[in-house]
Image (cartoon, rainbow over all chains, first blue to last red; front, top):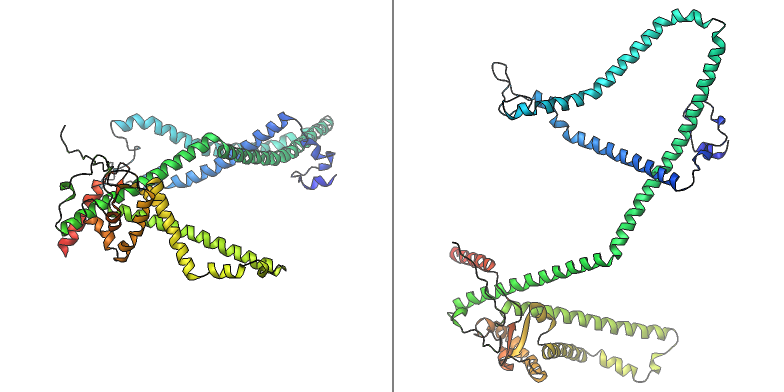
Length: 258
Length: 190
């Protein structure tokens, strides 16, 4: 075993020494290998992100679950729910009946996952029970002289399969980490390149410059407009106080000045 | 179609008011201050460099007339004269050259003669000198803009010049009416 073996822990009980050098498995070269790694990495990062967001969204929407709403349905004196401000599962004549099938489907999808899990558990329990019951019946056949060679072959087959699974697991583990790193680097590099290209693109620069110019022009115009308004305002007030003719009664500047 | 439409009055070519002109003046003063700061920074850097050279062995006394030159430029009278000179050149040159100082250009104003022409360097100098009575009158000369029919300050009257808007000056009537209403409310409360 090389020192590299320390970097890739063997999670299974089987001896890792069956592999001469686990690192050999991850030395794919060429663009196809890189592309595969990139895809795997992107997928891994994408799934992580999706999981994170799904959890977040679920947390946010939890207070609005149907069960909570059901609990909060006010009950009338005769025991029937007050339906005036309740959500659509209390079916009204028109709109709610049309939506009923949709709600049933959504409820079914929501329930399917938990039912599948409980059904699987049930099947496993039943399988174990059958195994316990059938073991005393099958046990005498195990002592038959025909069985041990077959058992040995079966055990060899199992061992080979497990070794192969271990090898694949090791390869997968190293590939997974490398793919994630690769996707991360690709994402960061692409982002930086995009920002660089935006920063150096003359069209974008022109756009920013023109927007900056128009903004400066707007500011100047605003300052000037306010100043002119204040000019007129002060003029009116002061001329009023000193009882001078209002500006409108004074002849405008001559044409040569304008 | 019913309803009132507000016609915005275009004051391009009309006499400029006190606020626009005062804002332009503030901008010009700020620009002159920055200019003077840069000049003083340059002089202090040069003096520090001379001192540094002398510590390296070069005696600045060996430069002919250096001491008398330093005494001259660090004289308060010279500094005051220098500052006034800079202000004089700034106002005279810009007004005569383009019709407005940078501050006036920002505010969209121009200084012209009564015949509507650009003012000469001589008239520009007269206008600058006429600033002194305007300032020395504690600002009355400047506030004369509010009372004069042609919005002339004293230095304008003395130099026979006018200051006009050169942009499509449209007062914001909403802003004006709001301010007038506010002023009247305050007046009534008092």
